[in-house]
Length: 253
Length: 304
Image (cartoon, rainbow over all chains, first blue to last red; front, top):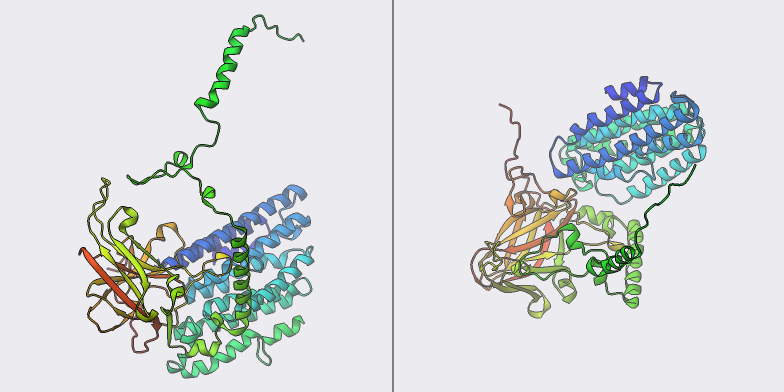
C-alpha cells in the first residue's frame, strides 16, 4: 500500500523507483506465506522479474538524468531512456513479449494473493506509464498488439483458472496500452473496469474453492445462485456486449 | 631525455639456457586445458574408472540420425500447434471436463517399455539385478530381478539392496519438458500382480530449486502375491513428502498440475528374486474421497 502511494505521489524518478521496490518487497511475504514449494517458486520468479524491471528502470532514469539533467517523471525526452523505461514498466505489469512469468507466478499462488497481484500490483507501474510522454508510439502499439494476441492465444485450452486469468490480464493490459497515447482517460476506464471484473472473478473462484475448470463445473452443487451468475462475469471479462466489459473495448475501437 | 643505458647484457649462454627451459616447459607442464575432473574436483566413487573424456567427446555425430531428429521435433511442434485448436492436451474440452478415469500407461507393446527406466544398486557397485520386459501375450509389463543387500566393497557404502522402475519425463518438441496434468483427478489406480513384497510408489512433481530436486512423494504398495490381479487405488492425499528417502517434517499435499514421473521402488532388505507385473497405471476422480491431505501440516510458529 505504502509503496503504491509513494509511486503515485512522486514526481522524481528515484522516489517512484523506491515506491515500486517497496511494492514488490511488501508482497513477497504474502506470496510465500504458505511455504509450499510452488508458492516459493512463484515468489522467487516474481522477485527476479520485478527486480530486473526495477533495475532497468533505475538505469534508464539515471541515464536520462545524465543526458538531460532532468529527474522529473514527465520529462523523459531522450528516446533511449524512454524506451528502456517503457520496457521496464511492461515487464513490471506483464505485457507481451515480457509476459512469460505471469502465468507461472499466478499459478503458484493462492487465489487471494493472485487477486492482489492482478489488481493492486498493476496500479503503481500504470501510474508511471500514464505520466510518460508518448514519444515511442510504435513501441506502445507493438506491445499492445502483441499482448492482445498472445493473451488470446495463450488462454486457449487452458484448464487452470489462474493461468486463464493471467492470460486475460495480459490481453486486457494490451488493450489499455494500445489506447494510451490517444486517450489516457479510456485507459483508466479500462483499467478500472478490468479491476472490477477480475475482483469478482477471483472472489467467485475463492468462494467455490475452484482452481481448474473441472472443479468450477462442479460448483453448482455448492452455490447454485452464484454459479448461475458466474458466466455473466466471465463473459464480461471476455468483452461481450451488452455486458460492462464490452464498453471499454467499444470506446477504444 | 636520454634512454637508460644497459650496462650489463645477459650472456648468450644464460639466454640460451632460458630458451632451452622454455622449450622444455611444454613437456613438463602441458599447455593443453587440464581435465575437468582436476579443475572442479569431481568426486569419484572408489572403484569407478576415471572419466578421461569431456562431454563433447562422447557425442556420436550421425547425419541421418540428426535428420530424423529434426523431422521428429518439427512434427511434434506442428502437433502442438494443431492440438491447440482441438482442446486441452489435444482432446476436446467436453471430453476433458467429463473425464473421470484416464489410463496413463498401458503396456501393450514394446514401445510402451521405452517410456520406462529400470535401475538398481548396480550403479553404486551393488549386486542387485533388475530387468523389464513385456509379460505374457505382450499385455503387461514384467519387472523382475534379484535383490542383494550386500553393500559394495568401496569403503564408504553401508547399505545396499534396491531396484526401481521409473517413468521417463514426458518431452515436448525440441526436448522441452512436459508435465502430466492430473489436477482433475485425485486417485492413482493401478492393476498389479506382485509376489507379496512391499513396494513404494514414488511420484515426482516439477521442482524449481536445486535443493528440491530430490523431493519425491511416496506411498506404499503392498502386493498380495498369488495368481490373482490386485486392483490398487491410492488417493493422492495419502502421498507424503520425502527428500532423498527421508520423510520430511514440513509436509504438504502433492500438487498434481505438474507431475513429472512415477516410479516403483523395492528395498525391503530381503535378498532374493522378485517380480512385479503391471497391467495398467491410471488416474481417476473419486468424488467420494474429499480428504485434502492425510497428514498434519507442520507449523513452524504454532499459535499458543
